[in-house]
Length: 200
Ligand code: ZN
Image (spheres, rainbow, N blue to C red):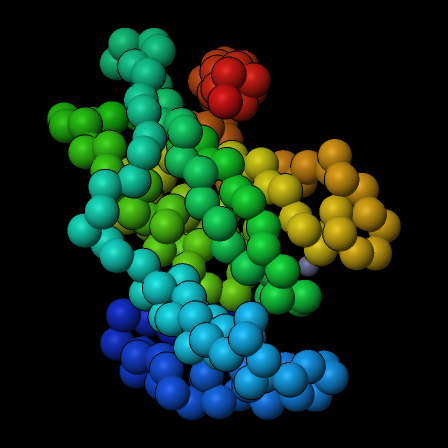
C-alpha cells in the first residue's frame, strides 16, 4: 500500500468548472488574454483533458502483445505504451512497459495488463513508483510473486528543460520471486524485453 496521496476509483470526480476557472486565472497570470480567439476555449479543454487523464476510459482495449517465449516458464507482455505526468514538473513522460511472469494454471488476458499500466499512469507519478505499482498489481492479479516489470521512460522534464537531454531514457526494473532468485530466467527476460524495445 502506498501512503502517498493519490486518487483511487473512490476519489471525487474532477470539478471541471473549477479547474477551467483556475486555468483561466493561470493564463492571466502568465500575461495572456484568456478572451482572445485562440484561448477562449482553452480553459474548458484543459479541464476536460485533466478529467480524461485522471479517469481514463477503462472500457477501451489498450494495445499490447505477448510472446510465450519459453513455453511453460516465461510469458512476456510488451508494447504497453502509456503517457503519465511527472509529479515534480507536471510535464509529460512517455513510458514503455514490458512485464514478464511465470504462468500458473492459467494465462491472464492481455488487455488486463494494458489497463493496469494505464490506470497507474493516469495520475501524477514518478517512474520508479509507477514500475513498482504495476508490478504489485500484476502480482496480486496472478497470485504469485514471480513477476518482473521493466519500464523505459522518456521525460519531457529532461528533454525540454534543465539539462535538455533529448535522447535521455530512464530504465527502471522491479523484479520479484523467481525473477530475483533465478539468474537464467532474469536474463531471458532482459534479452527479450530489450528486443521488444528495439522493434518498437
Ligand atoms: Zn520531472
